[in-house]
Length: 190
Image 1: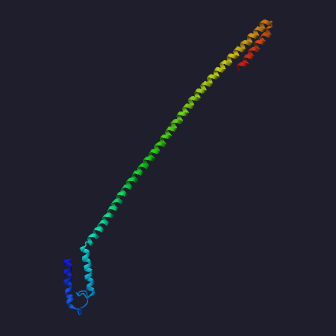
Image 2: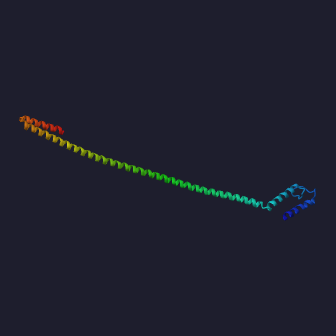
């Protein structure tokens, strides 16, 4: 403040001595000169601003704002990097899931083919067993029928022989009855 007062006295002293006849203009130091008074007021205003540290405060505010912007930019970069990392992770996981699903489909197809082949082999074995069982049943039935025909033929032959022996039939009649019995047995066999 002392410096300001001294400056004011130095600048204003020639102006007070000059009076009203002094020339007008910025370089005419007189309190009657409005340009000079405005200049002094402006200089006084600047001095007050510097005295109270307004430029430092403004600089500090601007520095704080710049630091805030810098930190926001750093945070944005970090978020961007994190987002890129997450994106890469999700893309990698998507590829892994796709590969896994392809493996599952391949395995399922292979299992289905194996199961189909196994079922086909089981059906073929079952058909073979059933055919063999049917052939055995047919052979058994043929054997049974053949035995039944033989038994019937034997019964007929015995009955015919009994009639021949008991009845005293002629030889031609006996031959005829034997031939009929043989034909009957032949028909029953076929």
